[in-house]
Image (cartoon, rainbow, N blue to C red; front, side, top):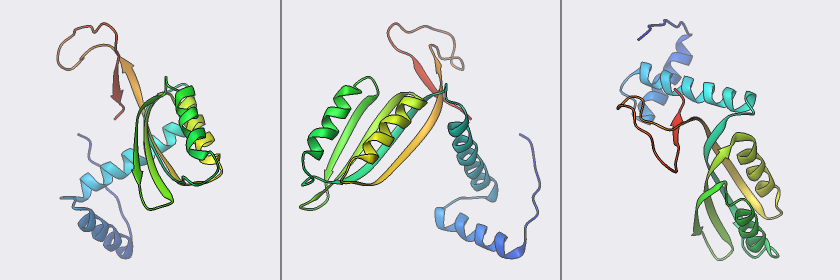
Length: 156
């Protein structure tokens, strides 16, 4: 493991220590590693259009909006190769939360999320996209092949 040293003003350090405490981290190092992973992944996701990704796309929508639920379901069926699973939650008499698990080319996953978010009546949409490497074996556990499926290995 490589060690790095950082300098910061006292108010920033105090705010960071409060964040660490609020989130339950045991050390500054683990918190910094998570922050860096998040930023590196966000940067990677915007730069490389050839990556493969897994994602959770969540949004709230008004199910009384004219034919919106039908359009959302149709869009998921049209992209059945991307959509792994959908969870639907009733929030109140008008609003629903859907969380869609997606996997596929990063550009296709982002395009699906963008089209869904652009639908009239869809609100509070959030895409959590993680780029992955596609592999067909357990490189750390020994080598063996699988017939019919690939492994999606999150990047460090």
